[in-house]
Amino acid sequence: MHNFDIKKVMEWLGYVLRCPICCIRYRLEQTKIIETTHDEFYGEASILIHSDCAKCKSSVMFNVEIRGPEVFSVGMVTDLTQADSSRFKKHGPILPNDVIGVHREIRKFKGDFISLFTQQQLP
Ligand SMILES: [Zn+2]
Image 1 (cartoon, rainbow, N blue to C red):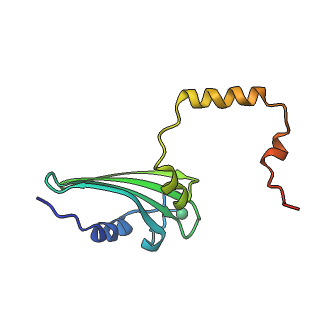
Image 2 (cartoon, protein in one colour; image 1 turned 60 degrees about the vertical axis):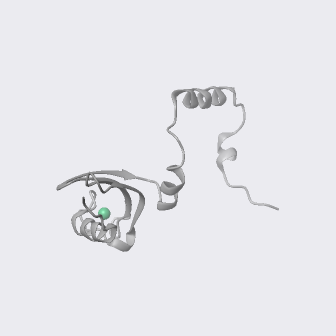
């Protein structure tokens, strides 16, 4: 059996993880755990982390898999904020029918896209 001390794991990740854009080391206060699962019996854990780079301002999501002594990490540059990441994790994936539905609506749309997506001020 293994005990996962998530604080120690985060300290270690803060030391190891670097921004893939500018290579600066992340600061822990700009790193947030989005989701974590662990199985102490098998010594496995999965941690989804969102980090904002203090230098280049890019955002990256890391998926870190811990399997006993082995650690795997995959990073993906994203334009999601930490709040977006938390919000969208509750949603399922976008399915082909969702895309087809949007395509059909856009084909039927006869209005002005610019005014539709421009923030309007209230009187
Ligand atoms: Zn950076």
